[in-house]
Length: 115
Image (tube, rainbow, N blue to C red; front, side, top):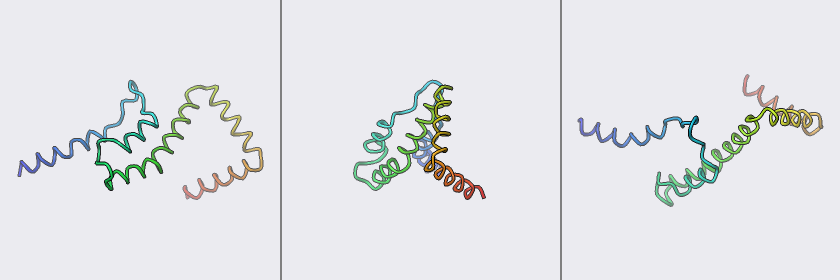
């Protein structure tokens, strides 16, 4: 019984270590190239397996787009001047007909999600 528990704990240990949040104070986040390389060639599963295909699909459809948007958002938020310029640009875009249409669509989508 205890041997089975120890064996199960040994198999779960890498998974638990992978769930630990990153150390963002001292360590930088990986580049998009590093994220792609991990999905495509990392040692977490074998080449050509279903897990690898699912990992690459997830990276392309979810991880890379979300990280790209997040990294650019963080870049804008790092400096007050960048944030001010981004806000001015957003207001100017909303004042154009296509921008107003997109803003209304975004507001309607947010309203639908919140209600």
